[in-house]
Image 1 (tube, rainbow, N blue to C red):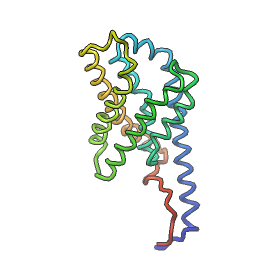
Image 2 (cartoon, rainbow, N blue to C red):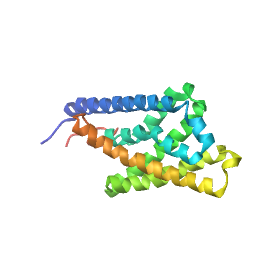
Image 3 (tube, rainbow, N blue to C red):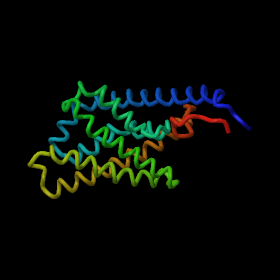
Image 4 (cartoon, rainbow, N blue to C red):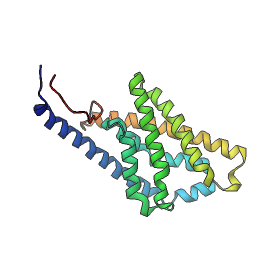
Length: 200
């Protein structure tokens, strides 16, 4: 069947608009979670960095979910940016919050792009994303760790916690997408593309 660009464009535009609205919704909910955790996370980080690494995974769960759910190629990065914009004034580190959030979102987007090209299962892409995102977040957090926490045991435990937490967030995001689908929430089936539509 042949479809003209004029006929396809409204459907494509409406679908794309819906996907971006869904990204905004995920960012809003993620923002509520981040703000809710903000009074506690500095104390947890000062007490025991590995525990903070596990708690901090909640700050990226819906960022990962937004990418899986909408199919927007840079959906996690966009969600992370919106989340940081909302939460900056309400957290102890202010706009610096954008650094770990955007790092996590961008690397997750890249991991998902590779996963889609290679046809990986959510279990496999979660392992890869967990390793990549976890290592990056550990590198971001290392310069601000207290000198008292820079012993080999604490540093090693923090790295492990970051990787495990990032893997868990990536894996749970896939489960959350499945749950939303079962609830009847509409999901994009293909990545958003800005390429012009032509007759076929």
